[in-house]
Each structure stands twice: as structure tokens, then as C-alpha cells.
Length: 228
Length: 388
Image (cartoon, rainbow over all chains, first blue to last red; front, side, top):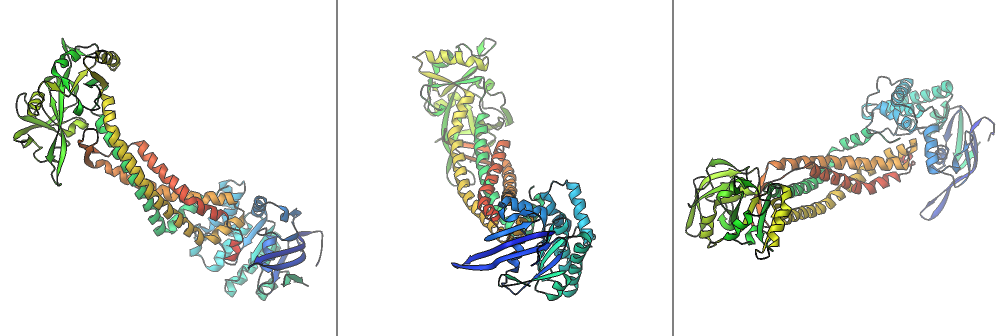
């Protein structure tokens, strides 16, 4: 574990337990982790190793049973639910395995969605959403509904939605899991570009070693512990 | 910031079948409620149109309606001479009238119905200046002629121009005219000479009521004081508008109460329908809701979003139901007026207030039916976005 001053994410003694059928399951065990700013890191591990749980904790979707989580100097484990929602809106971009676009909204409306939580005016929201779609190469698909797009294109829209608020951190949960090899490569290239050219910090959970190779750093989790 | 309205609209649109089924359920309830209120309003307006602010009715003390009242003929002149009564030339404007109810055969239905028959006098015409002959003429005094109101012509056997019916057994009368009176309750009456009516029913020497035109509505108090201060007369005076208001009360309250009761029962079904629709919709959109939560939308904005969707659904149904009920305005129907126990023909009357009440009740159904599903949606964890 490397501890440095330019860490954007700092986890200390993070433990996460779930109760299933009356039994207490410890998914993460006293975990310490520092993630450097502007790095692209892959999180790998077998099923049940706790990688998705760890991602959820870093994204502010869940809370640790014990330990502290500091993101860009803020203790998100101490935030109220409302504060955490507001923090996510400002600080985290999400890329989901199944894209999670709202099917009744067009591509540009989906990308605009996170901006509704910011004080940005309507015209500016639309302009920023269009810019984000241009960044991911979908300027000719702005008014298409998700059902009119291919899987790769949907994931690009999802990435545009993740970057439109210029977040501190992008979390990607198996972003290539539902895609063919070519589309997966395109998405990974896009994530690399966001990291290298725009300085975005990206944490990506993946099962795919080829995808993990594209990240600068790969973390391995096993039975709730990080392996060197 | 709230989730955009188009999200709700399009979400309803993509689930067209369930949206339509639920909206139709709500539309039915609103239709029933609006129709009942329009029916009640129709009764009020039909009877209300028969009354004038400057006409007073004198009845036997204790009588609620003309049917149960007797005023002796000698009292007619006395009443007309009282202060406040309008005069034309030297003659006070007013008349004694008799009212009876007879049973006649309905056309297109089995059985008989009660029809109100009014005996009118020479002095009756100024009491109802809006009365116009549509066809024929008014009955001549001293003859077995009658005129019938527009609303009942053709609905009852023999009650149409140049036809005849039995006023009582072996006492046929001929219809010589059809009149209208601005849609008032008079259009459901048969008119004939008051003396003929009295003799036919053995009521010589008395009438049911005396109507007088007042100098102005404000002259009523003085007129009533004069009528009621003479205890020997045993009479009471009431403004014609108030009289018809009381006449319509029983029937309109009964219709409103019955309609509202039916609508309330139906609305329980419609609300359950809305609740089931919204629960199903939310269950299918769990990941969408989780995604919205993950993106940072608060529980409150999710609650309002889905509550709003339920309200939109109900509003659509409500507007449809109100629009369909408005079409009922063209329908004319008849029923027994509880005050006179005679047939009253009237229309469904829509007012802005009735339509607003109906649509607001639909919105209330949407809020009540959508609240629990909206709470469930708001409780969705942002982790639902990840679980898929």
C-alpha cells in the first residue's frame, strides 16, 4: 500500500459487514487504500471478493461498517444521506455495466440529467451535454433514444453523462462487461483518453484481464483484503 | 432541482396499455361524480328558473308546497290589495292558481307517471312574462282545453298538440297549445283554466295558492308582514325564488348524495388501480430509480417525481371523465320531483365549479393512490443502480 500526499482517495481501516439470513458476513476487512489523483486504476478479484462493495463505498453509494473514507479531503463516511447525495452529484461520475440510461430520455437529455442538480441554466446545461457527447464521439446521435443506439454507443452516452459535471472521480462497474471486443476496446480507449488528456481519476471494476491491462494500476482483492 | 416532467410524461406514454386502463378507471369515477353533480344542478336550475325575485306566493300556513295548500277564493282579492303589490292601471297584478297531480301513461315505458296540472287565471300571464307559445294557443277560459309544457310533450300519451287525454276519468281535455318558459319547471306542467280545474276536482271556492307581482323585491317584507299579521287568514307568504329553492332541495340533495356515494365507492377501486399501476411501474423501473439516486437526486425529489406521475395519470383520467360528463349536457331526462311528486324534465347542467370539483377529486385520487408507491420509490437505495 502506497501512502502519498497527492492521494484523492484515502481509506483507513475500512470494514464492511452484511447480515444475510441472520449471519454476519464480513466482505471487506480493515482495508487501507490510497488512490493517486489523475490515475486510472483497475480493481480485480474473484466473485465475492468485495470489489463492487469497495467501489460502492468509494462512490458514496454505501457506508462502511467501520473505518474512514476520505475523498479529496472530505470524510464521506461522516456525511448524512442528503449530504452524500449532493456530494455524489458534484463529485462522482458513474459508468455502469448495463449503461443505466433512462429509456424515455434522448441521449442529450440523459447526459443533461446530472446537471439538473447544479445551478447551471437550461441553455448552458444543453450546451454542456452536447459538448460531452461530442467528446465521446456521439454528436450525430444526440436526439436518439437508448433503444436506437448500439451497446457501445449507449456506454458512450453513459460516459458522457459521467463527465458532464466535471467530477473529481469516475467510477466504472464492469464498463465493458456487456460489450463485444471492438466496442469494449473503444470504451477503454475513451476512458484512457479521459484519464490522460483530462486528468480524470478513474476506478474501474473488471473481470477482464485485457481491460485491466489498459489501466495504469491494477488492484487485486481477495476475500475482502487487498493483495500486493 | 426536480426530475424533468418529460420523464414522467414519456414513462406514462411507453406504458400505454396500463396507463390507459388506469386513466379510464379514474375517468369513470369522475364521469359518475360530475354527472351526479350536473344532474343535481339541473334540478336546481330547472326549478330555480321558475321563480322570480319580485313575485310572492301566498300559501296556507304550514304548507310546504302548493299541492298541500288551500286558499279560499274570497281571500284572493284581499291578498292582492295588500301593500307592496304592483298595480297596472288600477288593477293589482296577481292571480289565484290551483295545482293537482294526475297519473298519465308514459310513452316508451311501462306504467304511469305523475304530471302536475296547473289551473291558471286571466291574471296569471304577467306572473310569467317569459312564457312563449311554441305552437297553438293558450286554453280559452271555460273550455276543456289545455296547453302543455315543451318538456313533457311527446313523453306522455295524449300530451301533444291536437291530442287529448283524460284529466280524470271520463273528463277528456284537448291540447291546443305547447309553451316554453326558458327551461323552467313550468315546462313540465299542463295548464288549463283554474275554474275548470277546480270544478273537475271538486275544489270549487278555493285555489292552491295566490301569486302577486311586487312593486320591487324589497317590497316583500312589508307584503309578508301584512299577510302574516292577520291571524284570521292563516296564510304565509314566501318569495317565489325561495319557494322553488326549497322545492329543489330534497331532489338535488338526494341525487348529489347518491352520486357522491357511488363515486366514492368507485373511487376506492380507481385508487387501488392507480396504486397497483404505480407499484408495477416502480418495480419495473427499480434500476432507473437507483440510477437517479446514484446520480444524486434526493429521496424527496424521487417522491415528488412519482407522486407527480400518479397525479398526471389521474389528471388525464379526470379531464377525460369531465369531458365525457360535459357531453351529457345534451341529454334531457325526467324524474319525479320529491317535493311535488310529479314528473320533472331537466337537463344535466355543467358549471365550472362542478368540472373543477370533479377534476380536483381525480387529482386527489392520484395523490392518495400514488402516495405509497411514491414512498417505495423514494426508499430505493442508490445501490439498486449497481444490482441491475
